[in-house]
Length: 114
Length: 116
Image (tube, rainbow over all chains, first blue to last red; front, side, top):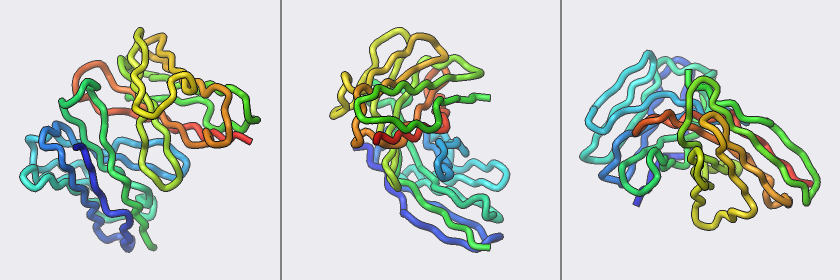
């Protein structure tokens, strides 16, 4: 199947690092994504990683991919109160007839305390 | 780049009304657009996939006569909720992808639909 699992909640103090974890089951996953959703808004693409990569860094964001364990993580350095939002992990593969279809996790609510 | 505009952002209307939601890719051509529904504190549920110039592909359990999708151009897809009822109240989000394999989906800001 295309199950994507995430923990539902994470709380951190401002200035600390946040690590949001995600696991998936589809061994044919090609790209994995992290999206951010603020209240009442759509999804903002944060970063994505191709399945043959182990790590991708973009400013405060670091994505780690363990393809063997089907585990993806998003690390946010120096977390700020503005980072409080829901973070969705998503994956896509070349399975099925719909190119580009995403399979989402349930989202992790990140709360940053001042 | 890759901006997707969704309109309107909020609709309140009476039961039985039909409501049209527009999704536009502003700075790129989108061969494929997706329509999602999101319930409070839940993930996105894919309703249908919309390809320019062809009929939309609906997910299992989504009524195609209830949720009409038109993708008439490479920059515009519309979702019409026909004869809306209170149970159709939800947050509807569209997304679009650039032409080409494995391009990331770019999302609109969503439409809050409230049926009285």
